[in-house]
Length: 542
Image (cartoon, rainbow, N blue to C red; front, side, top):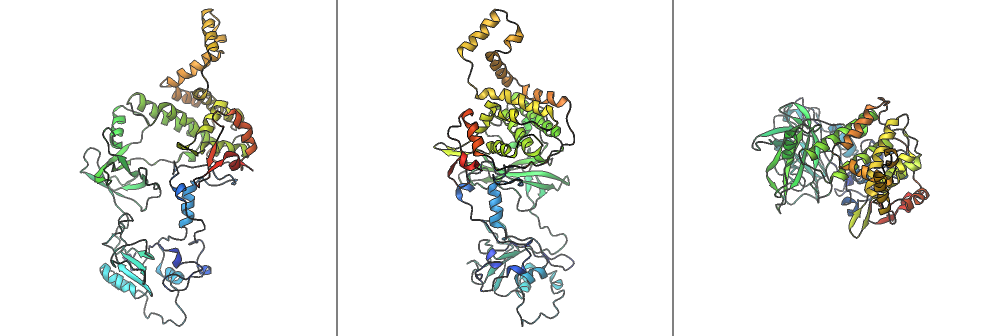
């Protein structure tokens, strides 16, 4: 980029074979010695390519996951994302002064005459068009070809069209004016004036009138992009609304284009009409023109929400964490019972809030659980294995519910209400994985009622406990009321903010001891992120 003051900045992506390596690059130029490169600026890839089985097997790509089993305290990260980051490390650079770029990547050989009067050489071309700018830049590059590609985008790379594409002399695309990132050594974006806009500016259609569009500014590429081509390719990002001058949440995705499948904007409108509480304020959103897949089964949609949320694991206190989950489940309750909008399955959705709460407080609050036990508990939430029906999982979570293992083993420091909440939720949701009362138990309950046995005695009968918990699950307000009851009780600390807990490497013996007591645990297997199946004991072994 060249700003109005005559200073030039280069924004480029760099191929690794031009930077560091044991083999000379294709241009014939000698490799840049690693000692001349700032290690904080660039480092070569250190991982092997990601296997297709890993690429396509990530079921929830953007959520925090449990660290590897050999980690004592590792930042939260998705394993496939981490591998992608490692693989592409050293391929991309951001803006840097041209003198630094030339010194590191195009060092002047001994005996090369210096360019006379080079200071301010670019200032005279500020008013020139891009073709002249590209021609001027060619004078400073040897064995590379600079091509004006500002009007000829690469169809395989989101229609990106750099102002100048730089190719090796023997690797120029057949169409020498085309942007081709697969062959490009680096690219340059030019900024001719302070008013130049280096950001993509999508225009999001209005929910009520799609012909009315609102411009947004985003930074490209988005931070989070779905990897699998078999899903909705959701791209969430922060964006600047040019009308309201506020930063908002924006996402682009592909939805199923079938009868009866509402647009997300229409679902938000329905929730708003039913006064569903605790939902994000809808901004703009609708189908993007006539953007459809070739098969006409998916349609492109964009939408914004007029709020920017904070990640759940950055909670300021455990009470605020529990309150946030309660708010979500209150919205879920009214969406289902008032607006008849359901995410998946009412019982699964409700049970999920317990798993979210349990995982988060285990991972980010102080408790009595040992590091090895914590590792075992956390891995239950990431469990997955393959069988003839495909990728399966969740058996260990249901097992921990049925055995009440987590509330029995784990106590949270000076937070008795958190202990009580998790214990009560576990006790109720466990009913989904227990055997129903026997005929003998049911008859005992009926006999007790006929005989006018005191209620204090009847309440301890297994059949009554089973029936009460089933009734709770079917009650609209039970879950939220349970959360609110414990939130209203004292004491709750207001200063126990999120703090990552150390995680041990786990214990295969501990799991083997627990496994016989866990329903459906006879053949548990975990993914080793290579597409094969690994017995659980092998994965958790010390």
